[in-house]
Structures are given as structure tokens and as C-alpha cells.
Image (cartoon, rainbow, N blue to C red; front, side, top):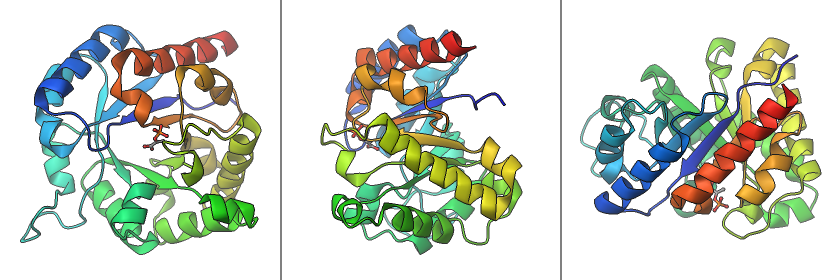
Length: 260
Ligand code: PEP
């Protein structure tokens, strides 16, 4: 069967003030607005979502949040809700990024609550999972990923699960310049899809987009995207430069259209 439509998502993390975000978005818009074979999304910091949303109008590039809180509103100083992200123009939201798990105490249980809130709020969650270097060395990659997946998605119904994006991001490859080999990545993606099939059925497993994340660059996306279970990428560092992010998108388009 045909592979899923790829998604290339840029996670800007805690970078870019308003003018910088405006410049990056404007350039990106001029470089990839015509792309239709690949979905493109950027997730800027909360403070510039409005600026970026305004520039993206009419471009087909999707907007995403980097995080959310599970309540819709209330006395939760410093937090942002799903309806707030939706209102500013977000379609997607990244949930459970390893930096959130590592530095802000996010757990599979909090990830679960956030996924539910995102779905209720009409956002598409991109749920991040992945093992640390130590876990990989101990041979625990599959068990860690399985636990993150099953606890993170606990209690969700199939109709909701098939809307999700899953981002497999080996922690040892994030921001380190070390990329998993295509075989290492494909092996885990295949495992994730297999688990989805076992728990939710094959049609859900075949619908879910599984992105790879970890030092994705214009030079390596072409090989990654040709793997059977790799449906795109979550890109950190290389998404901060419009030319490199656009080159990743273009390389992905070339691979997809070559195979069509
Ligand atoms: C990320 O932030 O999810 C990420 C994969 O970062 P980088 O591309 O810089 O490794």
C-alpha cells in the first residue's frame, strides 16, 4: 500500500524573537509554499506564534505548539492550553519532547493527559518517544519505547490514535550531530508500527505517521524518508535556518516523487 504523506516538522525550541521569527518564516514561506507532496509544520515559541501565524497565512505551512497544559483555562500561571493554541492558528502540538521529560519532569502519565487535551481541543498531537544512550546500550530500546507508547496512549480510542503523529527521537541523537542509521531508525519505527497494529489494529497502524527526529539534515533526510516506516522528520537545529529546513523539505519531496 502507498506510504503515508510525509510530515516535516520544525521544532524551534527556545529560539527566535519576533523580528527573527518573522524573517525566518518569511523566507521559509518563499521557499516551500508551493510544496504539496509533503506536509510542512513549524513549532515556534509561544511568544511568536501570532507573528508566525500571520505570515504563514495562505502558505499551506502548518503551525504547531511545542507543548500545552491539559486544562482549557484557569489559574495555571505560565501555562498555555489547547484552545489557546487553536485560537492562534495551530493545527499541531508537540507533546512529550525528551527535553520536556528531562528538564521539566514530564512523565508518560502527563503526556497522556496532554494528548487527550490536545485531541479535545482539535489539535493533532505529535507524541515524542525515544530511548537514552544508556538505555540503548543496555538493550532496552524496544522496552522503553513500548512503555512510553503504551502508557502515553493509555485509554485512547482507535479513532483518536490514528490521527496522531509519533516522533521517534533517540535522545542520544538530539542536537548531538549523531543520527541513527537508516536501519537503526527503521527497526524502531517498524517496531512502533507493529505495536500499534497489535493494540489498535492494522488500519490504525497503517494510518499513523511515525516521524524520525535526531540531527536530521538536508544530507540525511533523503535516505531516512525512503525507509518503509519513516513518514517524515521532527527537526530541531536545522529548522532554525530557512534554507536548511527548506532543503530538507525539498529532499523529502524528491524522494517521494521519485518513488511515485
Ligand atoms: C528535536 O528538537 O526534536 C530534534 C530532533 O533536534 P535536532 O534536530 O537538533 O537533533
